Length: 79
Image (cartoon, rainbow, N blue to C red; front, side, top):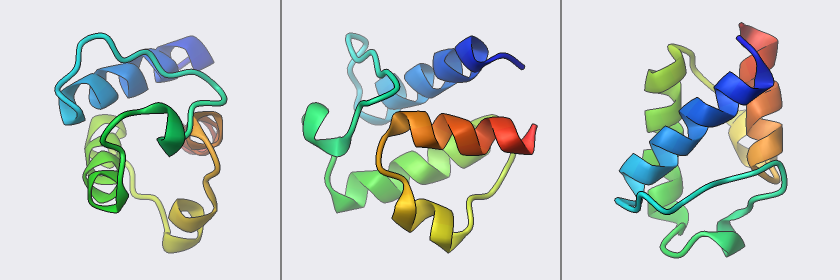
């Protein structure tokens, strides 16, 4: 799976979780860039990404992710 394919999957998850087809995340996207991305939605987002990519993040990964690019890095390291 390429980085572009991972980002396509992440974008689908974001659009679904936030119910907004206009969302398009990139390497540096953070919670400050997405309306409604609060702590509760972060949990929903993590669970949805885990389901989409058939993997589990560990607690250290979840708490240290600074942006969507870092999330993609973790996903790619597991594939």
